[in-house]
Image (cartoon, rainbow over all chains, first blue to last red; front, side):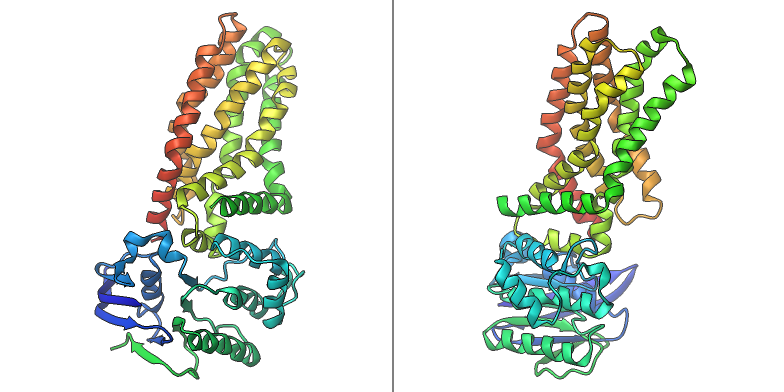
Length: 201
Length: 222
């Protein structure tokens, strides 16, 4: 279970949110809503441990994530704004490396299958692909993310066409259906059933 | 963990090979700078022999700095660094693998070409080994110290200049020991002491620098 207790975040001397608390159980989906600059990305970065909160703490199964370190990282997949892919590598090489860095090494067959599912050519170099295809290549990690229990997704539907957006929504539903947890941000119309935290309020 | 480190090392080498300019730039810079001294000074073998250790070592030091700015900056810009920070292996070990890749691309070629460069300075053949060995021990220290600076200046405006100001003073002991070892050998006094001190610096840097780099990265990424 993921718990956020009394989180406070300030950037550039401005308080983005204060006293933010919530808990996420197995199979739950949480959408973080709010306008630009309201702290959605900062909240996701706090939840994955990349950013320290000014106050409060994040706990994973009762333990503060700061004390868990790599043990916590093994349970999560974080996909930020930047796609975390290299132009000089092929999509298959990018995905293989991303999985291995996460400690979740996969066979060439599994990599090819995941890319096929997201409809991305496996042997194409990233620099030859469109923005949407690059995003698909990055999101292909989700298809291979098991046994990671927690997905933290920053604008996962950005730059995707309608078909790819449905595919990603399908992956998210599948993950929560199998007991996984998802926290995501989006500016697009939410079609996934789940709780919402609004940082505008 | 070993699989992750192997993956990082292999990835960085593969990227360096595909961005072929990365491999060539440091080596070409080293060759050009070390060639400028004999061309500028002219055919004065005694003077060239006297300045050779210092000139070659200064050129090696500056060459190794050329690609430092990109050591973490490209991974930071495309989001890969965040994935590395959230990876399965301890960050200290991962950055050590990245520093090793940096040395293999920008330091090892200098070690290999140094005897050829020494020819231009009319250094006796008996000193080629000492020169190469001093570079072999010293250039990894440059990569490790440089990586601390690269991590500390990550994402800062004007980071390149700041990186030079931060790192160059820290390079001085390595420069003194490296060039000094070759000078001592040239004077017939033996380079053992200097080389042992360089080896001690390498051991110290290998033991402590990765954790300093990791801490600096965590601060910079916030």
